[in-house]
Structures are given as structure tokens and as C-alpha cells.
Length: 281
Image (cartoon, rainbow, N blue to C red):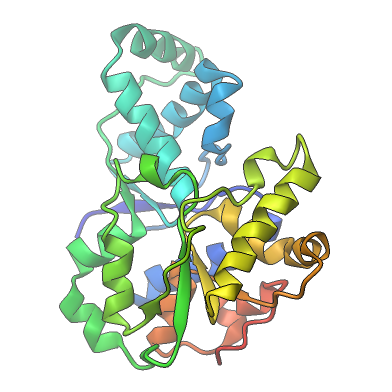
């Protein structure tokens, strides 16, 4: 198996701490060589590219170069950081002028731009390197009695370029979890407009959550740290905006798999850090 850095410098770490805790726990459980990516610059979110494209590219090129220098690929356990790193690499490999500009900027920081690094999603690693056979042997608590709302968000189309869309559904099938149909799967969670208009953000988030709730989801499975922030950390505020109770637990893929693999100690896998209580165990 390849060597990785686990990119855990995701957005708003004080709100997304459960995702980080679970990802680290899952990596340890599977004996994957993926220490935390120390000294990496934290994720900004893909929306930052529209504010300052060159700074965005320099930011992620820095991380790509650090990883390449140490001959480790970058392992991302959520969508935002996957898109930003992979998109930066793609842009620089296909635009010599931008590549020269970013290389010049990194040179001032005593770094030689190096794009000889892969950026891989957690779900890809699980299915293509760990493999279904090994994952199946770990299954202790199948989720056959539950149905989840899978929320991929408005950046899902961009994410498909870097990680196959069927990876997550394949993993849900492996743990026997049903996925409900709902109209909001690819809608906005509201995060990208929160700073400009918190009310609009809450309306968008509430609309998506009510759709999943009304379609009888037992919980929500998110693929992006931004969705986790909106649906878990701000859920009580979304309820006030909607004028309805929702009370849906929100899980990341790593948390879900740890539960399926028999890890039910809430503190050790980060479930005790959720704003909305996890009631599945």
C-alpha cells in the first residue's frame, strides 16, 4: 500500500472536530500509513478561488509540493479539501503560464514547485487499496435497519472529476445501508453564502434538511466539511429558521464505517463532539 499524508487541516476545525477524530481512528484501525499532514496550509474552500485565484493556487501548490518532497500522496476524507488540491494540480499541469507564476511565488519561500503527487479520496482508498474483501471481514454492525440521506451538495459535479461517484454508494451497500431518494442531494447546504447572508444560508440549509427529514431519513451522511458545519453545528438555528423541529443526526463516512465496524465508544470516534446527539447506538 502507498504512503500518504492524511489531510486533516479542514475548515473550521472547532466545528468539524468529529470528522477529524473519526478519520484518524479509521486510518489507525486499517493500519494505513497516513500520518497527519503537519505544516500543511489549512483548507480554504473552493469558493476562495473566485476571490483570489493566484493566492488560491499558491496555497494548495504549497501543500502539493510539501507532500511530493516527502514522497507521500495526499489522502482527503472530505470533499472540499479533495477538490481544492486536485483542482490546483490539474490547473497547473495544464497552464504553463500559471505554473511558472506559482513556481516563482514558491521559490521565494525556498520551495521548488513539485506536482509529482496524487490526491486521493478516502472512499477510493478504501475500495481500491484496502478492498471490499477486507472491509467485509470487519463488518460487525450492519446498517440494514436504517436508511440514510446521502448529501453530496452543489460541488458534487466538480468532485466527480477526482473521485468516482459510485464509491460512496458502494460502501453503503457493503454495510447494508439503504439510501433514500431526495431532491436536495445536490443542492446547496448554504455554507458558501453564510458570511454574506447568514439568513439566506440558514434558509438553504433548512430547505435541504427538511427535504431529507420529510423523506424519512434516519440520519444524514455528508461528504463535505461545510455540510457538516451547516447540518450539525447550526442545526438548531436551521430549525428556528424553518419553524420546525428536525433532530437529524449527521455523520461523516469515517464515523459511519467505524460504527459499522463495531466501534461504539462515542468519545474515541468523535461522536461525543457533535452538537446533535447521535442516537443510532
